[in-house]
Length: 301
Image (cartoon, rainbow, N blue to C red; front, side):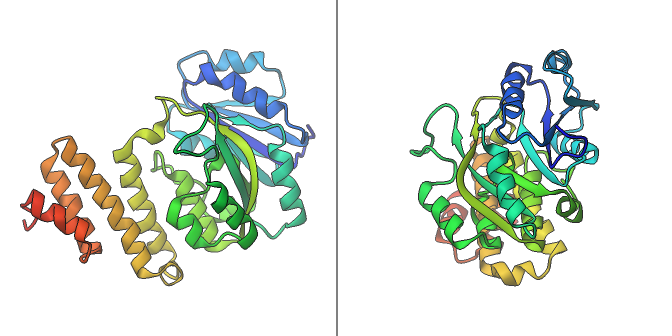
């Protein structure tokens, strides 16, 4: 690993000592060697520091009081010396050729601000498929290129599968530290609105699904997803024309609908009705939303 590496790999972690060693070893075992590894400990109270100390002196370790993953990753980026950034979650694994695959592409396409690839589920098939991005869509993205529509419609990009220009990261504003779970989506959309983004039909990481995954908090995820969309349209007004007003309304409305359904199940009646009103205001012709309007009642107030 050189003094000025080509890639800085950032791992942000919080109380994941039980998974972290495997993650670190998967990064240190890369076939591509011109990188540095930065671990940011976001206020862990377990054995994280001792574990990192046992992994060797090549790892650059930083500690901060608990401020969330976006703040931890931004700290890692501030310490990064390379012009390309890779991120890994502290419970997932990189494939041995992860950095090799991604860096070969950006080396040949320096105009690209971000390239990302696919991943597999560490525990086996999920949702009747082995890869996170379905095989047919993966081939299509690699063949046709990535449009902002692709990033917007299905949240296809994964931070663990991406290589990002540090300059573009800064120009996009870095990660929004007010977001707990959707800071990566926010970053991807901002990058896609400003810069060329590419995709490779390759598997470069293994995703570990477990009860501790923060993205399983559905209320937070949906609320932040809506905020990300609203911020994107506010900060990049031209995006509305690129995506189309109906597409933006449909996606935002659906998230309000999902919020409403979850809140109704938790007996949060007023909050459920409020979210459904928002969904209907965006998609007034939706028969599904109107059905719940009649079923739940009380939506006029």
